[in-house]
Amino acid sequence: MALVPEKGTHDGAAGEAVREAVARARAAQSSWAALSYAQRAARLKKAGRYLASHIDEITETIHRENGKLRMDALAAELLPAVLAFSYYSKRGRKFLAPRKLRGGSLLMFNKQSILVKKPWGVVGIISPWNYPFAIPFSEAVMALLAGNAVILKTASVTPGAGRAIAGIFGAADLPEGLFTHVEIPGAKAGPAFISGGVDKLFFTGSTATGKEIMALAASRLLPLVLELGGADAAIIRGDADLDRAALGVLWSGFSNAGQSCGGAQRILVHRDVYRPFLEKLCALVRNFRAGEGEDSDFGPMTTVKQKEAVEKQIAACLAMGAKIAAQSAAPGPGVSFPAERFIPATVLTDLGPETPLMTDEIFGPVVGVCPVQDDDEALRIANSSSYGLTGSVWSKDRRRAREIAARMNAGAVMVNDHLMSHGLAETPWGGFGDSGLGKTHGEAGFAEMLKTTVVVDDALPGTRRNLWWHPYSEEVFRGIRAAAVFAAASPLSKKLRAVPTLLKIFFRYWKKE
Ligand code: NAD
Image (cartoon, rainbow, N blue to C red):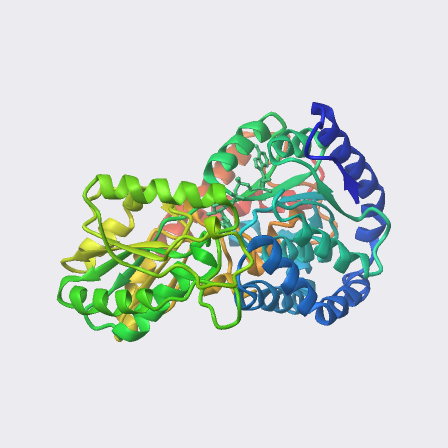
């Protein structure tokens, strides 16, 4: 592991650490990529076994370091990580397999095309503190199975999660230097990774940092995947199961102390069920137990800085006329985390379109509930955000709910659920607009770990030339024009009229000229 001290680091130390790690990774990657998929998966198996036997220890590390409850660490970090490891190990071979393309036109019958997938080389991963383990772990698994080397930087407040991941891959049979966890300050990470020579960068974090990284990456045209913030809408229809909807909003909005990029934030409720839904949600929130043990519902914020940022956002909402409809109580005695890291779970109402909760991401346990007239108004408000990460539709009419879901401007929309698709290894994850670019997870996420070369070849052996090659002549010109007419014209009778002219040049394939 390359260690660079947070304090006293001179500008070049982070860059030097990444450059060194990239050089070692590049040396290791060529032999790793030369192995068959089965060999790579077999060598990584020990990592899976190590993970399985260290679940409790890693859960505890995440709990102590991030503050999230052990339950949240288990359900939303360890379990998805185990599922991802198993899914990608089994399915990666298929995702990597070369694929023959179906011909696009009869006219091009002599060409066959095959897509060949190759690793990028050295992949950089920069990850946030809110899911410090599951996010980088599943990305690293995909990257390694695909034949890449990995340089990982976890957030500076959660280095233990990165060390845990290094421990897991350290247990596998990997070439020296193939995986490196670097501990460098966030502010230095962008320039360090981009000038350090990684071949592709996967960044998960805030929209502001994502934009900075994109600007830096432009200098090298470095390929990026950016998984950024969100301000998700949940649409509660008049026919929804309100108990389930309230529980679902509670879990996705407030678990992990509300520090989930894909948590419900803007709750848009059909007018006829607004009051009963709000009452149910508020009753749940008033009973929501802050603490740290297994009988608590949510824990402290990860940092005092983040708690203060959320407090400021709530104050800004209140200053614009928002009202607090319900709040949870402070934690009881005997909690070992500092009291100033706790913030009550909060439900806000009376929100206008310009209220910060409706326009910005609030990265804490705060949701806003707004009445809407109908599905169209709900969709208009949902889609008015600059973010487009995830969303949800709550309704007993599942067909209608799926139609509305498909019209939401978000990368993942759940029906009668929210946020949980991040834990499904098979579903792509990644948003639009200020929520970022590209995908992680699923086949689409695995594809981001690969670059594709298309190999185009003749279907017939022994042809001398293409129809459109030199020498040009009036006859060749007319023949190619006939080909265009054949491809474009309808009905069939018009197409057929072009055939005799086309046939005049057809034998050029084999003719000596
Ligand atoms: P952040 O942008 O401050 O930091 C993310 C990572 O980038 C950390 O490792 C940090 O050390 C590093 N970093 C900080 N400044 C950097 C810079 N200038 N160049 C390069 N790296 C830098 O974000 P955060 O506060 O750690 O995370 C919270 C944000 O992440 C929220 O906005 C949340 O929505 C988002 N997030 C998104 C997803 C997703 O899948 N879309 C998942 C989790 C979190």
